[in-house]
Each structure stands twice: as C-alpha cells, then as structure tokens.
Image 1: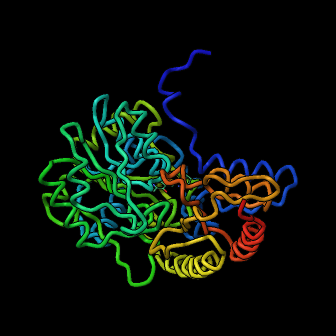
Image 2: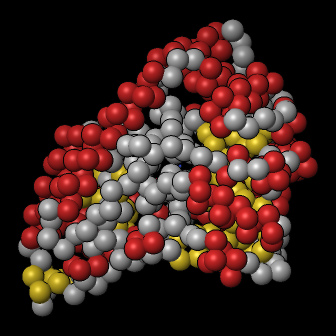
Length: 399
Ligand code: PMP
Ligand code: GLU
C-alpha cells in the first residue's frame, strides 16, 4: 500500500505502545507490572463525573462552538488568572481533544517546511513527531543530568538560527520531573525576546509539584514575553481525566483563530460532555488535587530511595510530574545467561522478559543512558515492581 511520506517520518508513540504491549501480555495471562504510560491511577473526581452525568441528562450532547464553549473558556480564563496571574480574553483561548491534540493543531498552525523548532532533551516522546508532521525540523538541544537537565540562556542562544520559530518548554518535565525556577525562566526570556521566537509552554504537570518548588510560567516574566508565549495545558493529569480528552491553549488571537480553523476541519468541537466535566474540574473544589499530589509525593520518595539502593542505578529526585528517570548506564555491558544489556532498549526488554516489568527506554526521550518509570500507580504495585527490578538487576553479572 502506498502511504503518504509523512507516515514514514514518524513512529508510533512509544509510551502508548509499551502500555499496549503490557496490557496485551496481561490479557495472555502474564502478571506484568507496568511503569509505562503516565496516567494517574486515581478515579476522576466524583463532582466531575456528576457534572458529566448531568450534562447527558440535560441533553447537552450536541455540537458546541468549535474552540469550546464560552463557559469552559471562562473557566480556563479564571484558572489562568488565579493560578498564573495571566490575563486572557475568550478570543485568546481554544479547547481541543487533549493537550496532545492542542500541540498538534498548534504545530499545524505555526510551522512548515524549512522551520526549526527547538526541543530540549530529554523530551516528551511526542514533541519531535508532532513537529515532523507539520513539515518542520525538530532541533534537539541536549541537556545533561549534571546541569539539572535544564537548558541555559547561552545554549539556547547558540541553537537559534534564522529558521528557528519556537522553543518548547515543559516544566515540570516529562520525563525528568525537573522544574524551572523564575530566575531561570527570566534568563531564557531575555534570549527569547532578543531573538524574537515563540515559546510553547507545556504546563500539563503544573499542579504536580513537590517540596518547596513553585510553578512559574515564562509568560509571567514580562508583558513582552507573554506576547511570545503560547500556554498549553489540560485536565488529564491534574484531575485524573486522561480519557476525557480536554486540552487547551492560551495565546495570541491570530494563533487561536488559525487553530480553531484547523480544528473546524478535523475534529470539530471537543466532546460536549467532557467540556462540562472540565468546567467542574476547573471551577469546583481543588481539595482532591492536593490529596493526589500528597500521594504522588509519598510514592516518589519511596521509589527514588528504592532505586538508589539498587547497585548500578542512579536516580535523581524529581521535583514534579510523576516520573523517575534513573541513570542505568552502569549496567550496560553486563549480562544474564548470555543476554547482554547494551542500551536502554535492551534493558527494558530484559526487564519485561525476565521480571515481567514494563518501563520506557530513555532513548524514546532522547537519552539512552536512562529508563523512565511512571509512578502513577498503586504503592503495592510500585513495591512489587521494584522488588522485581532489583532481583533482575542483581542477576546481571559483569561479562
Ligand atoms: N504534554 C506532556 C508533557 C505529556 O506528558 C502529555 C501526556 N499525555 C501531554 C502533553 C498530553 O496530554 P493529554 O493529551 O492527555 O492532554
Ligand atoms: N503523556 C503520557 C506519557 O508520557 C501518556 C502517554 C502519551 O500520551 O505519551 O506516558
């Protein structure tokens, strides 16, 4: 079958692929523990589910305006004002079917052949492919663990060419969990304003943040910086609403109207019922979010300590999101029963075959020295999964 060239430029989402594989193995009867996709294990809050049920019963089941209802846009405007001190009008907001869809629409609206978009690595798996689908080129800017997995102003400055259109910032980060401070964002903003490029600020893990860390959006650095920022967010992670598919964007009116035009020719509006649920998530009590974050923090503390006790595994303490990204490169070159570990992929395969544990190889995020484990799962599974990893790694011997 002849397919369009764009289908060969990209790969299927590795995070979703690994989760599907773990599910398929479970269906075959294998007792697999999956640290795969980042999807909160909590149920969607009761008040949010009730809002959706009420929407169905009230017959709110028809098309809505393409870019979302005014009610939801107002809830988003209220949230951005209250949490981020950022002021937007309705014409500066568009709602899509999840933040991934928002990012896809955004890339379609902004980029084309010849454009370059800077993506700091380790990056969330979908950024490069979403950029490739627009025809533009992702320019990967490597960061090291010793630099806290963050880009600095000098590095960003050097990476910008006359073709650079935008840089993607994701704080707290998937997969590293690092969080940029206000001062670090201020330093980056200076370069961004000078070079006149856009920032795509993916704030999806904004609320999942630990210790003394505070979330800051680069748009809040100055009015000038706000004009050059598009803020992407959604309800999937904060409110355990991954299946409801609601993401949104705030930014320049021209960008919003282009996105809305594109969306009018693909999905039309996001699901009417999910929009009602998202209004309740944003406007209703936020107590449940604090409860989930407390639980995630306990899991993080446990998993980081446990991983660091496994010889050959080195795990940085993430400040946000629900992933750990341990360095496992000391295990490369070791083997078990003639099976050699030489990369994050071979380690992930070994853990799945030998220990019935699914993890995502770091190479999917642009760093082959690491693997990613999501801890958006029960403590019981985390404990059991880590014991299995410990046992499997202990079986490895220098060869
Ligand atoms: N951005 C990042 C960094 C993510 O990890 C995810 C994961 N789903 C998304 C965006 C997209 O989220 P969703 O489409 O569920 O809103
Ligand atoms: N964002 C989550 C992850 O990184 C969910 C899967 C996906 O969309 O990539 O695991």
